[in-house]
Length: 374
Ligand SMILES: Cc1ncc(C[n+]2csc(CCOP(=O)(O)OP(=O)(O)O)c2C)c(N)n1
Image (tube, rainbow, N blue to C red; front, side, top):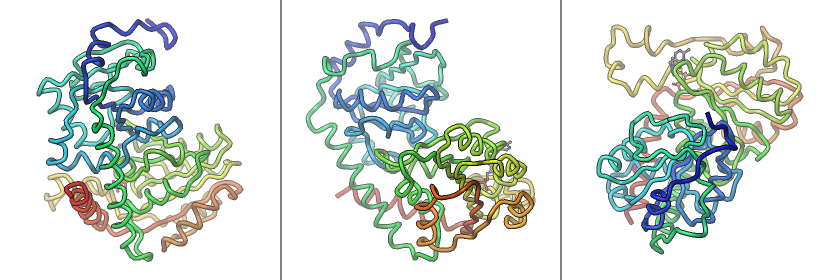
């Protein structure tokens, strides 16, 4: 099996597709080998707009063609129709974003070539949208040679991303400072944490909010555990990042995820590096409120939403970890700006209303749609 340094050449048929394309779009997903930054730099040189999962860590490369707020953009059907690419280049895993996945499936069904660069031969194509798999990195192609985008193509993506970003920030800015929201906490973390800080983000809504509220071009290094058992071991993983990087680490997780790995606080208390664990307590697994099962009153709360009803302060005390409850945006900003001064672990509880984030997200999608319809 070929390793990362011994891959095949990019076939001439793929080079021909690129040469013919006027509207190519790159989708850059999570990549454990850390190729996201190289892909971003390649796209910047080629002039190709790039949609990047924050977990691709492409914000460490050149980001001049990185599209901001893409998850919010692709939710808007009217906008999507006008922005259909004629070629999709994929690297790494597929982002979690449901609207992006649905759009990609539609494009593939309509015959748009989807070329997946997969030097690891990892196959990651959960929606079966790939038309050509190339066992080589996209960076093997000379970015300056063959791409001839329509002049307005890149510009339209970047302009829409800027408008969406302004709409998101304006709407989040209207929320009172005493009302902390899940989208607001993610946005503030991406805006405030330094580039050398690791932001570990848990399932389920935090990792989805990260896709929408990440800044795209700047911000901390984002990591996550993904997969079917994605919420086990989350606190211990964050402690592992802090130990391995010797750099500040911030974990954002929900209350159910915290409850699943509360014993991970034993690893967290060993941390010599700054380790801030922020729990967004919305009373249970709020992702499930989006599912039809939430209408089944007799079973939903107890068996699906599963409110942990933990005393977070007592949990912190049990493992001898300093505890704080954050109740305003000012206190949140103070906590995030001073994370590098922590001497070890700290647990911060942020209580949020169960349905507040749902309402806020809906309002944000509407504001973004209005901003790009103008
Ligand atoms: C070990 C394990 N059990 C169950 C699941 C399914 N699961 C995914 S998200 C989730 C709830 C997460 O709730 P919470 O941490 O409060 O975050 P929220 O949904 O409120 O954002 C569960 C139970 C999982 N991923 N891993």
